[in-house]
Image (cartoon, rainbow, N blue to C red):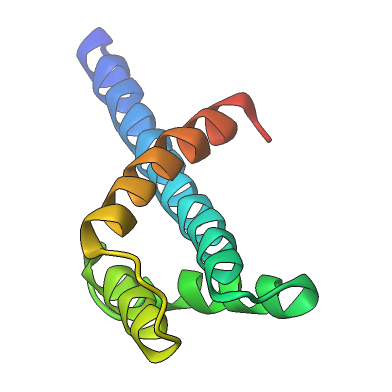
Length: 107
């Protein structure tokens, strides 16, 4: 194997690892977001955990964050919880940083 092939293989492995970590961080962010939203909705205990799983599952409907945002926004509207889309997006960004740090730390 030439030096070029070794470098290319290394880049491919790094890309795959980065994508895996990104996926894990987004899933973790969605779980944390679900737990936060559950608290805002007055959901506790096992029901909060189940709700967080619903939020994680919502992310598989389409690419991007729109599906998660749409779910939480609709759930807040259904329960008359006054939280803006902007607040949800800010929480998503905040929790993505937390989740990425946790994934990177191996938690």
